[in-house]
Length: 295
Ligand SMILES: CC(C)C(=O)/C=C/C(C(=O)O)=C(/O)C(=O)O
Ligand SMILES: [Fe+2]
Image 1 (cartoon, rainbow, N blue to C red):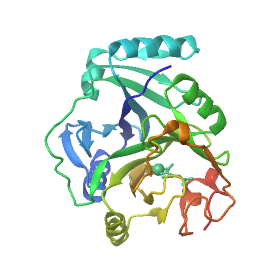
Image 2 (cartoon, rainbow, N blue to C red):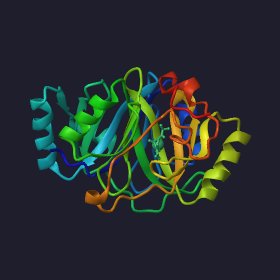
Image 3 (cartoon, protein in one colour):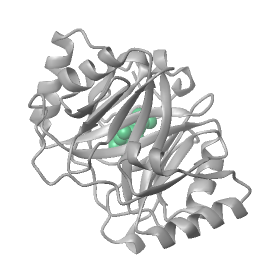
């Protein structure tokens, strides 16, 4: 069993580094911590970065999680290889590029590239947010997979993840600490990053950002609304090259694992996704979620 400590970063390719960075800074509000000719690193909290862009082909390159130390990394390597996965150890230069001491990479059974890292660099200074979006931290990662049940089996068999809630066969929300979910899998045609989430400090921040993004002509995919699963007030919006960002406030914490009963939400019920029953554009951008939408 591989014990996950936390989410680490999303690494994304971009065919237009300037536009990708501009959006992440000016619209999302992240701090640009480092920029080279073909790289950019952005942060939302004390992690050196939670999002990096690499110039090249557009699309997610990897989603990463932190492990406690090298022994656990070596054990993870052994366990995943024994499960039949091809595991690659990152070389020194690649580790430096990720601002971690060591890492391994593998593809999950659906083709999502996942990196497990040790000693992600911590930056103790306060984040110099580019705008006052109220971001408190990098909140969660959501991956796509064509078979969410099989993805759940993979992630809970090999990793210290527990399912918190199901949304039919279309989504599985998982936790590895008291936060309701820091990892989710959504039904998708293939591998991909469904979205990356940033927690914000208040409902006011979600609503202010909604107005700000609309005023700036940004495509709102869904929200503002409230998810019945985590209880969070959410807003999904689309960045360049199809990268979906989410702000949310008020995610539930599950302090007592033994007392928690996994819930199953029927996606055909009107409140299953959004207790406020707001409209959604998510079906347009993610046809595989059609049927999940109440609006
Ligand atoms: C839009 C999906 C299907 C949904 O309802 C997701 C739930 C939550 C939550 O409960 O907070 C998420 O944030 C998520 O998985 O993205
Ligand atoms: Fe989310």
